Amino acid sequence: MAYETIKVDIADRRATLTFNRPKIANAMNLLMMQELADCFEFLKDNPEVQILVIKGEGKIFSAGGDIKMMMTSGDPVDFEIIMGYITRMVLALYQLPMVTVAQIQGAAAGLGFSLALGCDVIVVEENSKLAMNFIGIGLVPDGGGHFFMKERVGITKAKQLIWQGNIMEPKEALDLGLIDQIVEKGEMEATVDQIVGKFLASPILAVLETKAILHAQKLPELKKVLEMEAAAQSRMRKTDDHLEGIKAFIEKRTQQFKGK
Image 1 (cartoon, rainbow, N blue to C red):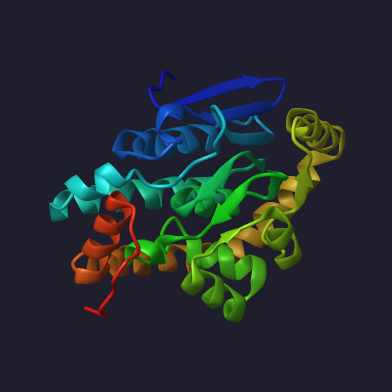
Image 2 (image 1 turned 30 degrees about the horizontal axis):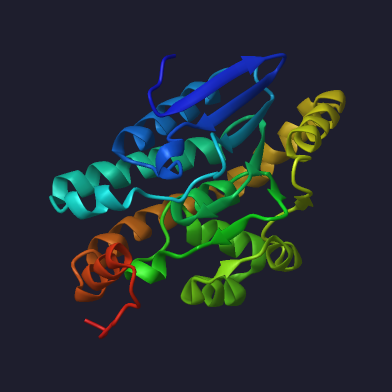
C-alpha cells in the first residue's frame, strides 16, 4: 500500500512502520491518523508478519497531534472524524497478532506517547524526552492514553503523571515501569535488531497466543476508555482553558488557566 505520511517495509516476518513527517516532528494530522488506522488494520490481517517496529523518521519519534489541525478543526464533524481514526488505529494496534516494538528517539509526546505505550516493548534512546502532556493545552489524554498508562503504572500513579504532564527523562520513565529499556545514543538500530532477532528465534507462535489471551480480556475495557476519551475531549475542546492552552503554546508563554 502507498502512503503519504508513513512508510511501511515488510521483509522476513518483520514490518517496520515509520512516521514520515520529519519537518514537523512527525506530528499527526488527519491524513496520518487515517493512514495509521488503515495500516494497522492491513497488518492485522497479514499472517506473514510476526513483529512490528514503530519509529519516527529523523530525530523525533512523534510530537503527538498536529497543533495546526487542532486550531482549524473546530467543526464537530471534523472532530468526530479525528476521534474515529484514533479509535480505529488504537484498537487495531492493540489487537495486532504480532509483537510490537516502539523505537523512541528524540521525543514522544501526547498521542505519539499514547501509541508508544500501546506497544509490547518500548525502547528509548538515552537523550530522549517523554511526555503525556495533554494537560498543558487543557485536554485529556486520547489514543488510549488513560488505559495504557494505568496498565503500566497503576491507577494512582497514572492519574498523577497525567495531571502533572511533565517532560520525563528516560531513567524516570524506566524506574516507573513506563518503558522497558534505555539505549545509548547510536545504539538504537542494533539493539532493536537484537530484540527482533530474539523474538523471531523464539517459539513466537506461543508468544503471540499469550498476547492474544491477555489482550482479549482487556479489549472491552479499552473500547470503553476510547469512547470516554472521545466524549471528554469533545467537552474539553469547548473550554476557555483549552483555547488558552493553545494560544499560550503558539505564543510561547506560560498558560493562565481559570478553570472554565
